[in-house]
Length: 234
Image 1 (tube, helix red, strand yellow):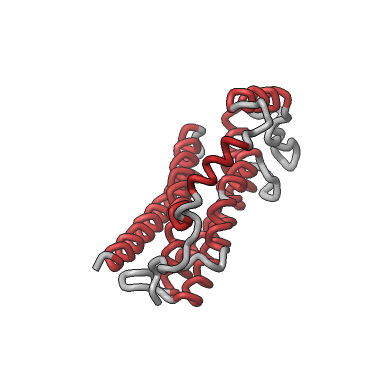
Image 2 (image 1 turned 135 degrees about the vertical axis):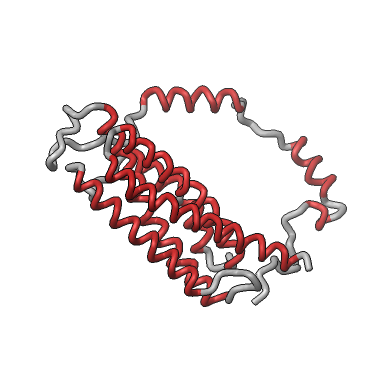
């Protein structure tokens, strides 16, 4: 099925209403904003909110690991493991949605097959279980939403919203998942290096394997997008 954007009756631009642009500009001057606020003023309010806001979240104590007594690096590791757990959960859901887009729109020359997407979906799911197990090995609780997990969940909302939008086709969905794959690649890189710094060699080796897999995901998505763009220019 064709993945390119259709040509239709897009009326969002002002030049589709020729003759009314001048009226709009004139009325904007005639009915000027009544607020005396400014961009600078909004910035002052944001600074004040930030100074008085609570932290994004916290790390729990107990569950076999007393983070209140743990060193800063251990606390950081638990936080970043929680981040990867949340991200891999989201990645599994994102590729599940991509499979649905494939079923709805079909693919394109050089694009992914359904089996390609299911393969990545299953690898994301395995990564989720890998991280959950690692958190347990370190004495943490994999059900905890850590501050870093809370942050990536918020960051990822736009990607998921795009893929779940029924108007977004497979090609457009791949553009959204590319953003997630870039972040996923960097996340595994950071976690692997932190684990090595902490002397957690065995866990670092497992994370490095996942990191390599995520690099393959990133390459595949880029290849599919390049094929889609190449097909649109022919």
